Every structure is written in structure tokens, then in C-alpha cells.
Image (cartoon, rainbow, N blue to C red):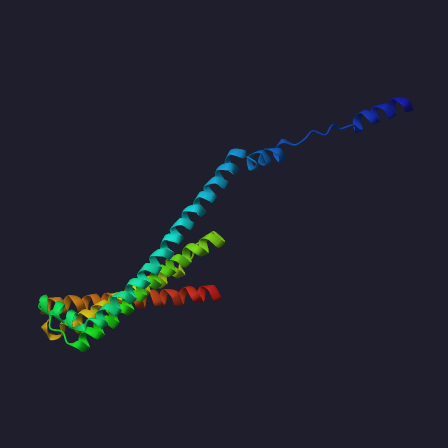
Length: 198
């Protein structure tokens, strides 16, 4: 009887262990070779495109910077010619007005260079971190609105009192819109900064 009981106990104690299929299925999905290869190719292609765009922005920034100084120098060295060009399009201009307009135009061109460099910084940040940020685009919007205000100021300083009333009204509306854009983007930057600190 005891031998029979021990053999039965041995039979009941033996439990076969089968490998669980649930633990193997996610591994098969995670190690899909086609998905892994496609992800690597697309990731490298994305970085390559961003790199080419970044180089183009850098070259454009250099050309824009050189043109801004070339245009400013040409205007300053040829003030009588600039006054003659203004008279040809029925605008009264003095030497002081031409110089002031050249300075404002130089600042506007330099702000354009800053916009290009901000976009280049965004591309560089993406290549390093593979993540984008909202802050550079807000800065670009503020700089663009500032350029608009400067261009309107240059137009008003050159035209003076000879500007038609309708054009003056349109310029004032454009100034108000640019100022509102700067204010709205500044408030957005402030709110985003508070959220980042919290």
C-alpha cells in the first residue's frame, strides 16, 4: 500500500511546465526587423534633410548679412544719388532723411538675419535633441513684427507730410497690428515661462 501511495504522489506532484506564449508575443512584435530598419532609414533621412536645410539657412544668413552692409555702404557713399532716386519717384528727401532711412533699413536687414539665424538654431536644436520647441517661433514672430514697424517708420520718415491720407491711415493700422502681435507673443512667452518654472 505504501509503495502504491508513493507512486501516486509522485504522479500527482509532476506538473509539466510549458512556455507561456503571452511573454513571447510582445517580444516578436518589438523585434520586427522591417519596422526597425524602416525607422532607422527614416530617422537618418530626416536628419539628412534637416542638415541640408540648416546649411542653406547658414549660407542665406551670410549673404543677407553681406547685402545689408553693402546696401548701407552704397547708400551712405552716394547720398546725392539716393536723393535723386527719391525725387524720381516724386518723394522729397533730404540728406538727413536719406541717412536715417539707410540706418533704419540696415536695422531691418539685420533683423532679417536674426530671423534666419533663429530658424537655423531651431534646426540645429532638432539635430541635437530630435525635438522641437515653440520659443524660437515666438521670437521669430516678434522680430518680424518689429521689422514691420521699422519699415513703416522708414516709409513715414521719407514721405513726411507728403504721404496721402489713405496711405497714412493704412500705415497706422499696420503699426497697430504689428504692435498687437508683439504684445500677444510677449504675453505668450511670459505664460510659457511661468509654466516651465512651475
